[in-house]
Image: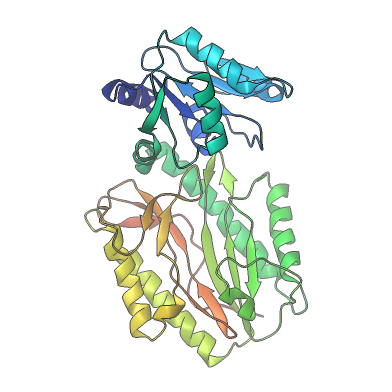
Length: 366
């Protein structure tokens, strides 16, 4: 049995929990090795203090789940069946008494909670698995880090494809398509999130949607991308110049790079997440662009592209060796430009190492 499952079983014993109900697909994959996007259907992992766990899937996924790394029972349901009745039947067969449920309160929908409550009307659902799962996934193993290093290499490959696709008159969407096409040709089938390519003042929207805007000479082009490799994600951002952008745009780039590097240099065990945010934010604020840095400095990542911890102002969390997170300061000035530089990293005993190595110095394409 995976160590993480043993840790969860022990947590249930310590907290007098009778069953853990996990239905966040990312957490299910982390604990079982089975990846799925069930859409509106029910996918869940049920774990008990003493009995064996079981995986519950739509019927059309049962064979896939059984043929994977999961070594325990897999149960399922047809579309015309009530999944909650079947889950209740299997839970009651596994344990004689079910009084205390532990659930992911940040993920479990009200409708699904009510469906469970209907099957177990006298049970309580007060125990929250959210913080336990966050801590469980927080410190990466050497194997996890090795996998994430490979995911980072594919992000570097994607940047290379994207930079080479920049030409005057090419649409943002076309560059996205070329990046993802070339990755699929290499066997990478899934992106960490929808690839972002934004040109000129479009990049002033931090999470803008690539569209039919055509690349023009003398502007900045922002790339934010990542891939899923063997169940783990990468995430990185680069902003490059096509031609010679305005002096204001170049000034913004230099400030963001300075903030990024200062925070990166400060990463080590013992510093807090809040202190890292302050280091980068102060540089941007002192340069007069504080209001234009409108998000946290970074986020954790691993089997999901956004995980605990949040690298943000005021967060007292102490950074530890083995944590993985992003450093991604940005300045976004409407009508002028948007610049973000992002690397994800893993913390070492005396600093950090980044997963992506595409140059961050001001780079001119064409």
